[in-house]
Length: 348
Ligand code: PHE
Image (cartoon, rainbow, N blue to C red):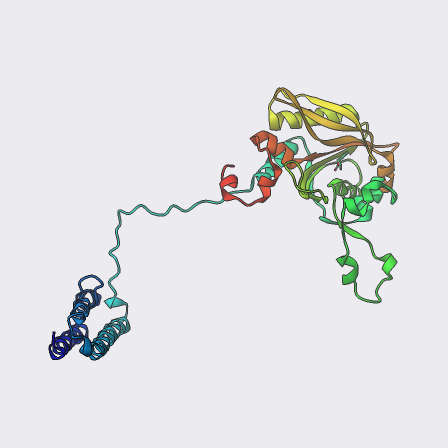
């Protein structure tokens, strides 16, 4: 094909394209023009490009330049048309039509975390037995976490490797206010028994409370351990409280949560703040499920909070909330609770 013919056809096509884009009144018209001239498969520019192959070899550079000029001009005309329409505002826009028959996107409803649900249920059960909910801080001093609970400084339970002691507490104290040795050492509480002390310090007997909350221990996470978990603590102090009362309350608690045919088993144990002390098992299916510790409040503890051990006695227990929830729902790994995997959490 002679060069002149090629460029003439090209110029005509370019003029037609520019006119089409310039006169396009809406997005549909622009799109139609775009397909006609710039369409990747059968657009006119594409056709012209094929004609390029038919031009004599010597004319190729000149023909190529014409072609590129035309291409740029047509693309610029498209861009100009689009800009003109956009500037025209929303009334010009023609998006896909609204189809009222397309199924909607359902809103997924959130709900309480399984541990929160368990805590609410346990509060409910113990509330029916006359226990009121008490609370205490998660950042504790050594008096409430250890000393008042009859755990002396030499006790292995106070080992820095067994607890999350906080060093920031000291650093944050304003300089010159107190001497370093007077500042209380703080730690993340390792047990909710701290709340027993806080309640008894403020309330004269009788007391009948539960405390539910997080406790922290530097355990390596595995299927049954996590550095943070929840306990339900119970404390009842009154005249003539006995081990039989403890067993009755725990049995009522267990049958309410796990079913009416549950049995309670006490195994001798030791805690500095109870005497005698027991580990509590609840029957589960064909075996026994270890729930936590319990016992009669040690007279030293009653004295530490200003109670008279000759006048009153009491029992206390501390059970693992995750463990109860795991057994109820047959969850075999405690880490599931804290992965934030919605597929797991949605099941409860
Ligand atoms: N505080 C004990 C623990 O965390 C449990 C416990 C509570 C034992 C109350 C006796 C009485 O292991």
